[in-house]
Amino acid sequence: MNQEPVMRSIARRVAAYPVALGLVLALAAPGAGASDPSATSAQQVEALVAEALANNPEIAAARSELEAAQQRVPAAGALDDPMLEAGIINAPLDSLNLRREDMTMKMLGLGQRLPFPGKRELRRAVAAADAEGIGLAVQETSNRVERDVRVTYEELAFNEEAQRIVARTRDALEQLAAIASSRYEVGQSAQSDVLDAQIELEQLRIEQLQLAAGNIALQTDLRRLLGRTGPALTIHAAAPQLAAAPGADPEAAGLAIDSRPQLLALQSLVERSSRSIDLAEREYYPDFDLKLQYGQRDGAPDGLSRDDMVSLTVGFSLPIWRKSRLEPQVAEARAMRRQAQSLLLAERLESQAGLDAQLALARQWRSTAEAYQGTLLPQARAASASALAAYRVGRVDFLTLRQAQLREFRVSTDLARAVASHNQAIAEIDLLVGRGTP
Image (tube, rainbow, N blue to C red; front, side, top):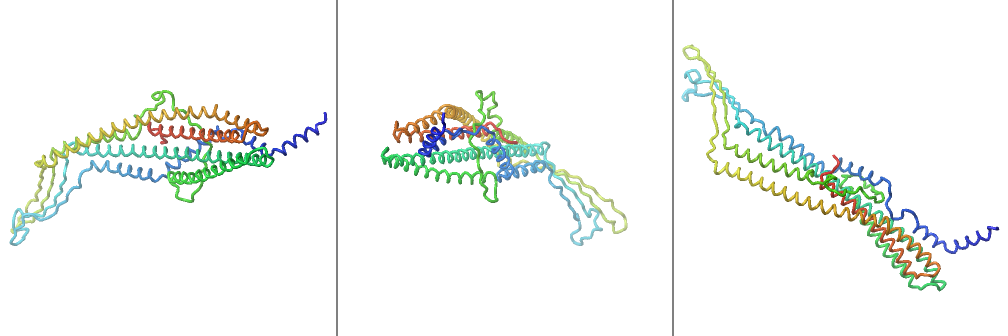
């Protein structure tokens, strides 16, 4: 059989419908609007989180605060500096002669204040509890910055995927407009088809502008989180990819709030308040002042020598202002402990409510994404291809074709949004259960 007439026939058809062929290929392209199954997205997030933990100024400030708090622990239990005294005692006022009176001497003394036993240990315990709470706050800050990086990255990934979807849709609509214009010129379609296509193209152009502006804002926010101060390098996100599911049983999956650093920090605040109460009550006991003095006496006027003298004294404070000074301190410490306990309870309830809500959202968005990915998007693509084929032979009008194509656009966009929202919920869950990069 001679193949040449057949080949010429195929060539004529291709030449007659170059735009339609391009549209079919665009709509039928594998993976159009779907998630990339590679691990590039996870690798990018890991690298960005590491950069943020190393360079974010808020984390750096929190770490400096922790370092300062740790330095206060040994100082809190240290003794006061000893007091060195030097002078002349019992000198006669009329002559200031150091040899005339037996009790006149040159004195050198050393004094030291000694807190009542247990006070120094309690002061160290209060300072150590402060440092522990600040250390947990540093981890909470790191986890929050990590959450912000992941959430912003997912939003950026959605933005860039949406831009790609809009660009593909514009290309397809431009080809539809060209088909409609060609059919209108030969009287096979109405002018309204061409105008409708142009209106849709203009709306997509506006949406592209909005997405581009949103991309700039996301890039700026991400650079802020990363602590980048140099030239503004563009960050390109990989195609959206579903993160691992949180698990059907929260407790079995370790999704409990008890390990969240913020709750542990509040628990440390409660313990610190208890130590403060013990310290305030210990202030009822007196501190001691220990003094050792050495007195050097000159010889008598008649040449006899005089012995040097040593004095040892112990003094202690009298807590006579108990009602005006000490009792208010104890009452203040107890009130602060009640406040810390209330804050801990409020934060625990809020964290548990947030965890329950985010778990529900993660399951919802995952089911939505799987439905879009497994059913709706393939159906929307098949409907677009079918409508295009029917429009080419005049079996459907332009409105039906345009609606089918825009339906695929909406489904592709909704899929990208579902994936990003699911991953953002997972980031929130990790923050609430205290999961973060060490």
